[in-house]
Structure formats: C-alpha cells, structure tokens
Image (cartoon, rainbow, N blue to C red; front, side):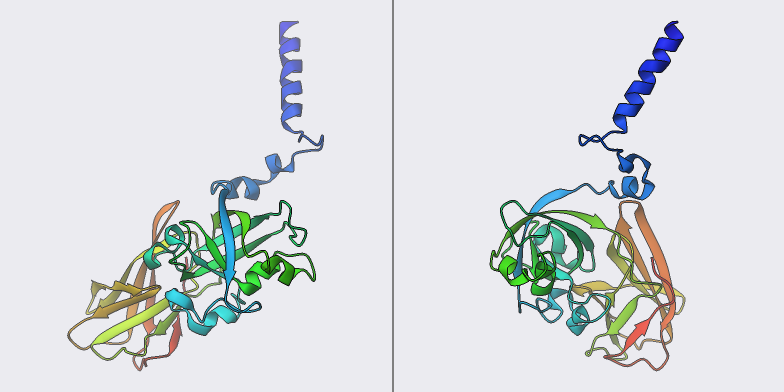
Length: 266
C-alpha cells in the first residue's frame, strides 16, 4: 500500500511540474534547444539609439566594420555597447538577443531581436545598448517605430547568444598594410566567444598579432612577409578556448583594401 501511495504522490508532483501558472503544458521542459539557451541567463539593461532614424548608427564605428554594417547579413541590426559590452574592442562581433520590457509604452511590441556589437558607447552605462535607429525601431508595433524612438530610452533584458554567419570569416586588409606591416579586420566569426588571440604563420612559425583597435589586428614584422600565409584565431567563450586555422587565406598577390575569406569558421 505504501508503494502505491508513493507512486501516486510522485505522479502528482511530476504533473504539477508540467503545468504553467496559466494551467497549460510547460513546453520548455521538453524543448532541448530552449534548455541549452538558458545557460546564458537574461540580464537587465537599458537601450537607447543613435544615428539616423532608419540608419546603422555609424559607419562601422569603433570596431572598424565600415559599411558592412548596412549590408547583409547585418542589415543595420547592430548596437554600440557600454564598457562591459565593448570590452575595449574584444566585444566586437558579439551577438546578443534583446527582449523589450514594454511597461507603459504603447508603441512597444514586446518582441525580441538580435543585434551585433559594432561600436563603442563611451558615455553609456556599463551594460547599455545604444542601438542603431533601425534596430530600435524594429521592436515597435507596425507603424509605431518613430513613436518608440521618441521615447529615447527603454528597459530591456538581454543575453549573449551564438552568432552564425555561415562557413567563412572575412579578413579585410588594412589600407596601410605593406610587405613589412600587415593588419586585418576580422568579421563574421561564428560562436558565442570573444577573439582573444590571432597569429600569422611565417616560415612554419606562428607569430602573434596585436589588437590594434576594435576588430583590427596587426603585426609589424620588420622583414618582408612571405605569402601566401595562414591565420590562426582563438576564441574564448563559455566552453573554453577554441582555435581554427584559416589556411593560406591571404594569397600570394594580396593587396591592401581587399577582402579575403576563409573556408572555415567556428
């Protein structure tokens, strides 16, 4: 009898866990992808916006992405970040899911969106998102984008999420590069980690590059670079360090201002 009673109590407890306060099935208990995404918990912050109302904030900003912020796949869905988001440039390229807390603003839709950090906001609070006008307006109800922008500041929840831009990383060669000095801006890396180390291969030796500013890394070799050459990138995230090698991504006849793409990504 005690065994039967114990089983009945267990069934009641299990059933109650499956119910939400609205007395419906809690599908999150059976959604593996939802459980995995909860590893990055929601945090509170505020969001503002800058630049043209329908624009991309600024032309690439302090990360150095120039006009790529306006084109696919970003399509102006970007943000400048406060100090703990920009991280002195280490936060460039990080993707965040932003959920709006509507409260009393009737123009707010309450929906979520994703943005990438592309700029610095030196006057912002530590975790403030200074969104592009396009991104800020995208969380408004249909036809209410400008009304929401007029609010200027809204409360949000945010969490770090994995970026996914496909199977290649873009290396944009700095216009000041020459046979003895090489600098490149790195963009469209997948994953939820920050780039913490970049190395270039010369004569079977990996030479460390330094973060010049934003997403740009540089090496003043002092002697002539031997092309083609490979670039090794290390990304640090929740799962620890991950390293990939873009083999011979910089071709023999490389030129400043050109964009070269790897065949690997995180």
